[in-house]
Image 1 (cartoon, one colour):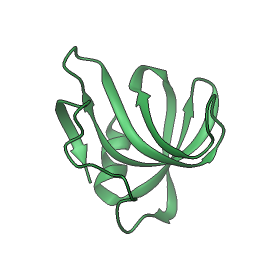
Image 2 (tube, one colour):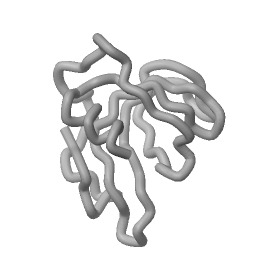
Image 3 (cartoon, one colour):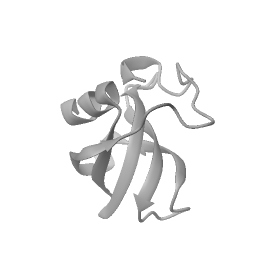
Image 4 (cartoon, one colour):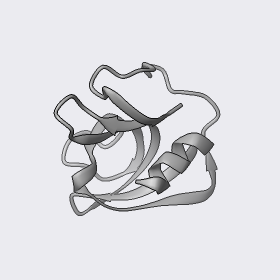
Length: 96
């Protein structure tokens, strides 16, 4: 969890293992919803997925098996479609 929060703070790309599949994401917000489930909203820029390979994703924190920051890979500004104060995430731990 702290790795994801730091990546959001530093706008650093993450390599995560999600449901057994590697993904590269730009994490924009993490926290929990009204029922206490923890999520990350991010933009997938590479890797594999059960659905579309790239684009906006809402990821269940319980299904993230590993997360590491990729050195030297940052994003400068939010992608088109980013909404600050995501309505799904009611308690924010970190956000761009």
